[in-house]
Figure 1 (cartoon, rainbow, N blue to C red):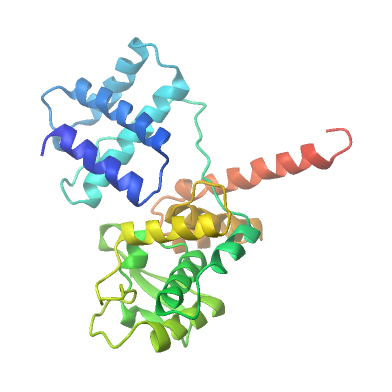
Figure 2 (figure 1 turned 60 degrees about the vertical axis):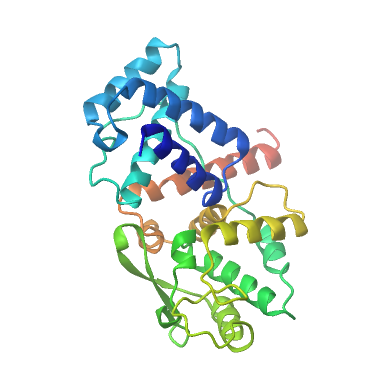
Length: 290
């Protein structure tokens, strides 16, 4: 595949799995076009750390400020992580390249009230509604990636003990606890909504096929509209909500890191910044001398 084709495949992944907005996708596309132009005839599969470092210099020469350059670098990092996920390469040339200072994108998340509205949206009198409710419950209860959610197996659910077994990035297995509400939703779906299909995959379409990431993304968008949630919602937003709500109630950062499947705790620490920013807003809103 050409660099352009890899870029388009990555953008499709961001649009479907991450649910990024059209404007964000457009910005990412521009970043990738500059990166491909910088690489020239070098394939993204063969890019070296030195080429990523010089890409930052290339951006500065073209007048980008540190914040914009950092966003472009974040796009490039995402591309190379995607190539690893697709097993197109075994090397990530961005791991040793530091981003310009002053850039810290904060994840979006739902409030607890918005999560409750979303969970109340499926019609529980239908098999599809039972499935959708179970999927949303499991996603919010565990913080799984959408690919991990759609890849869950029936034998990976231990409803008696309250945990799920999933396979994350690099096919790494991890065990994640799951709450009573999610366990009940899954049990009800298995009994009344799934049907007698022989598939090992837990969540299926009405015809017995495995649910795809795109299927669930579309479902979530539809329920968000029904719930009158105005935020740009995606499966990843529920993952962010899971982590933020846990930490907001005093959960240990290391425990959240393990549940999310983050290799580096610095990735998880972004959620502490979310909480800090929210506390600042509360202070400004209610303190008489703020």
